[in-house]
Image (cartoon, rainbow, N blue to C red; front, side):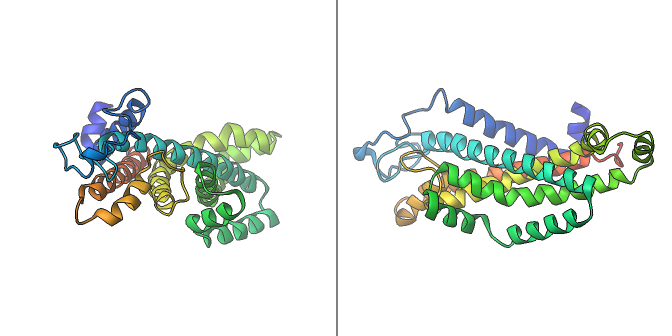
Length: 273
């Protein structure tokens, strides 16, 4: 296993960055350098190392603490959204692959319609009815994820349905439900895992965009997107306010994308090196 990681630097780097992201997020549940919402007006707009490791914002709040808690808020929201979208999308994909016919055409057209509506626009529409907040962000991101996983699962499942051992199972009288559970899902699980990893990076980026627009978790809960939004007014006086959350988002998305690419190569049955 270690030898495989060393031969794949993309996977190794992505794994290290992702594990570090999770470690920081989980640590924030138990410890932060300072309370992330504690205001110290006398320490406002202090640069890194002069007041805290990464400086302070316009209210004197410790940026390092806010970034740590923001990691948990962003990651947990994105994980819930991707988990919901992946579960529903995978269920739809394997169901359509088993049924085919008119159902496949209808589901694919619905997926096309959902793809045409960006998640940020979905969140704005949801926010108009149920209000902005974490639930709105999760639903908006999950809705966009469903057709992604439905299309992936459908394509992969159709390939498995054409295999000889599946035809043999049909000839033996196995139900389509049993075939789906025993033969289809286990053989497409690698592709789903890779896609979850990649989509998690996209979800973090989308959640940051929603928080930037005020459609994510409400204040005073720190989120990377809101930290960027708050930093707009102080770009000249305190550029670190935008630099720190911006780097956090970029590293998180880059690490997850590299992990996904590495896993795709590692789990590719055609690559046995």
